[in-house]
Image (cartoon, rainbow, N blue to C red; front, side, top):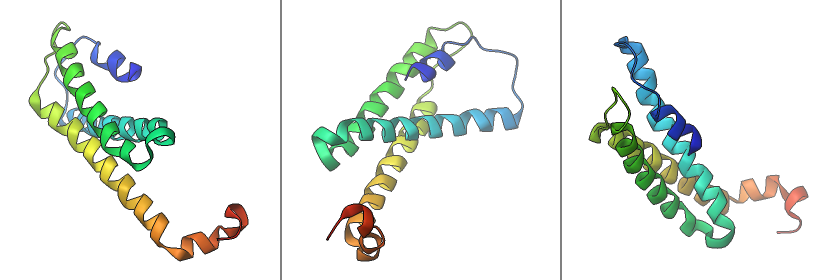
Length: 121
């Protein structure tokens, strides 16, 4: 969250090339996907799988606050489109994590492959 805050506090520069804009937009998606995964990891010891939607919600709320913060920086502005990209990253990470956990739980081959670490199943 500190890295996102730092990046959004940077004043606007010159006009960007199309590929620089694309990289920044992918950064929005990736940063909030990672934020969701990290919050899920941090909250899961206490909440289990219920941590995933909460992590996505926290990420979304932070995206909204970050765009507001960005609107206070000289030459920058917050946009609903960036919040939508952030939300897409957060929701994509949440769905991917739920899918991964469901495959891990239901696939006996995965469990059998790790019996040495898990002990008897």
